[in-house]
Image (cartoon, rainbow, N blue to C red):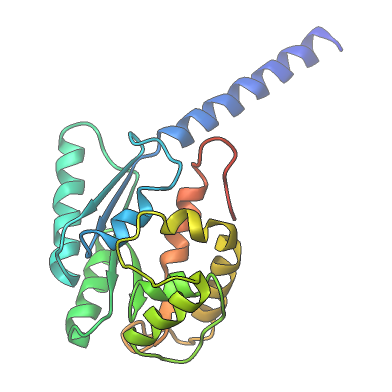
Length: 213
């Protein structure tokens, strides 16, 4: 290899290392409507704690998005900005106007929404099956119990590891489900979820070669 070619190769390697370092430093803020179920799932991703800040706030829809904006702006002022800010919330029984307002405010402020219509457990169920018909929250729980072969508990600390081997299938099912709604109307598209979009982003920064895509 000539000296010039060797120099170019070193430059390419340096640039790639620099890109990788920037990716590792990308910081997430994930604020969740639920205080335990959703944050209990996301904290188990094998991502450095300095990279991901997961909070279960107990706020819903518009208030949750407003709090995400407040924390995002405060982090900017402190000189430690977040690169990605996500709100995790359910359609549940909230008025359509509130749910749509939360999505609109999030979009206008560059906040990303990992919503589920109608419950976060839809994301769990998609690990086992493709579901494109609305069912009750009780049905979510019952079906998860059947697939997990033990009663489903909302705050089960082991749920991430139990579902991980099927995560690729869940991402595929969620994407297929979302694609069927044209045009998309999240407040009435039941069932639907965008949790897989957040999962895919977190997987980009997994440690130890544990990425699932």
